[in-house]
Image (cartoon, rainbow, N blue to C red; front, side, top):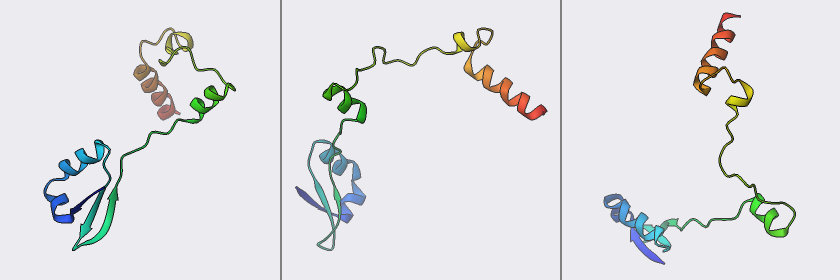
Length: 93
């Protein structure tokens, strides 16, 4: 754990952030009193990861978003075109 003063944090925040990214906890002080603690983010597995690990679920095969437009509206070239047409219909009501 490292300690830095508030003035140092204000003058060079990227240095403090770099230390935290490197895994170091940084305590910021104001006139010698701790006021802020910067800690590295800990990635926690999500609910799906936990279910897959326990065997209650299987991981998705395809990680990408499916192309729904060709299936739902083959005559539409893009999602933006579909959205604009839908808003136009709403406005004309």
